[in-house]
Amino acid sequence: MELRPDTPLERRSIGELQTPTEQVLDEVHREGRRLVVQADGAPAAALIPVADLQLLLQLEADRARRFATLDRVGDAFKDVPADELEREVAKAIAEVRLANRKRYAAS
Image (cartoon, rainbow, N blue to C red):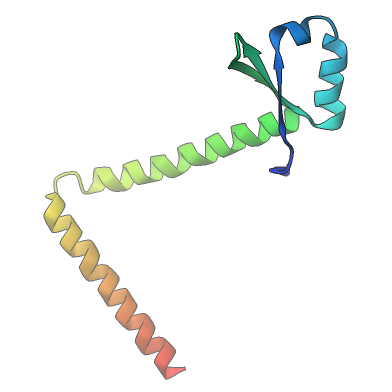
């Protein structure tokens, strides 16, 4: 699936969608159009191609997995005071940076 950021969002009122529903669905399905449906001038819903929906669902699942990882890491250090944790992280980062500088200087 490919994200197409160059596909513009079209805006249509609910009234514009009531008669030619089949045509609108065809535009979304075959032409890849993205339509924002407005009710009283405010966005109410969106019609997007199924590929866009699948991509959105995949991105949401990926995000949930990443946050679950962060939650597990956070749980492992829940009893460590924040200031101590910050000091230890800064120390670890400094050690890795020093090791990298030494490694790159040797090559």
